[in-house]
Image (cartoon, rainbow, N blue to C red; front, side, top):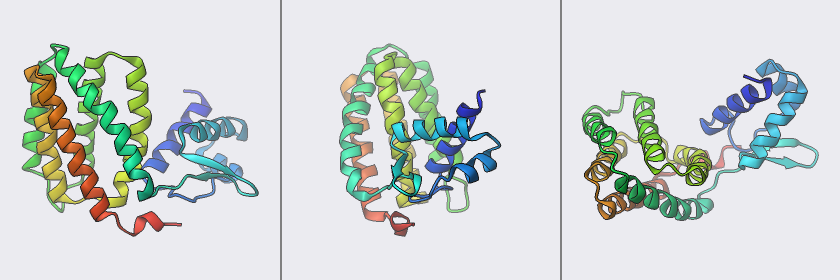
Length: 216
């Protein structure tokens, strides 16, 4: 892996997971030393982050991690509805059933094991598997690219509300319904299940977003 690719991947992960919260100055010297790369590949990585909307250039400060605000949530979810609902329809028409049937069972099992002391990472990993299965079934590189860019910002927004076991259990059941609908080959059922999940997700984020929105 090229040094610039590695720097980009690590910075992107740190931003999405809030190890580098909004407003953090991404100083070239500091970040190059932290990541073990020279400043040239770091600058390339920072340019890619800016293109993704994860960093902005500010006069006198250089690159800064971009803001995450509840003001942007409606816009993000408007785009999410357009992309994910249509992707679910296409996936249901694809005739690919087995991976989604298996995922439905795993989500149903996960819903019974999510608790306040359980780490949320395995659940989010399972959600990422569903995303990947939908992408593979849709087989549209343009839609996949648009969804990939959107998911990065959604992961950051999700952190505003933090992890709530009750919501994660409900979300697991909703994901199971989406996977089951796609496996059944019913496009409109898959679209409706996806729309319901997005509605509940948006309501939860708006109702439970905490003080992290104001993290400097």
